[in-house]
View 1 (cartoon, rainbow, N blue to C red):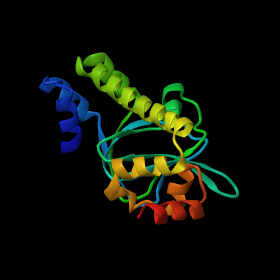
View 2: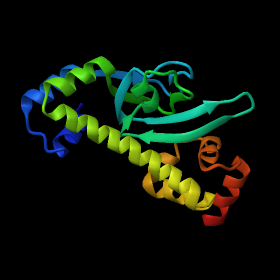
View 3: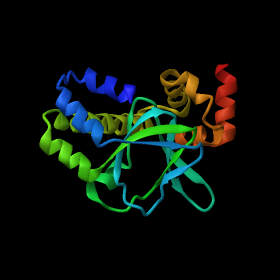
Amino acid sequence: MELIKKYFDELQVQNTHDWNFFRSKLECINYPARTVILKKGQVEQYLSFIEKGIVRFYIPQEDRELTFSFSFANNFVSAYDSFLRAMPSLYQVETLTESTLWRINITDLQEVYEQTDAGNIIGRKAAEGLFLKKSQREMSLLYDNAETRYLKLLSEQPHLIQQIPLKYLASYIGITPQALSRIRKRIS
């Protein structure tokens, strides 16, 4: 809970009552590696904060899975489109490593918004972070080649990239595992 408290403090919200109320609504869940935490077709019920671990978003397909996002420690994670619209998710969310998530359900989050001054700040920051991540991903797909996308991911999370199987990295970048191997060989 210390990481989420630090995140809360960085928002410059000093109200102890608001923090205690928000904290009372959080639930800590530990997941083993390779656990699907949201299946395609389910409605996302939680906004979560990753204390530790790596989470992958992917579209399951018969012949292969299409990985389109990763989330790392000290970030919010959610199938946010499903969460906001209360509609079934078109993709799955899975832990890649042993992960600890602090989560709040939609009902409790609405209560935090209504009953605290800090609630709207927390919600806005979480939404902004998720939006910026999605926007950066889209711009990268439009402007960057596969090698540049790989190098960006490597520079952002170098110690964590080693924990992600190459087939997921390749899918995320939009290339085959063989093409990723060639890129890795060329830049090493």
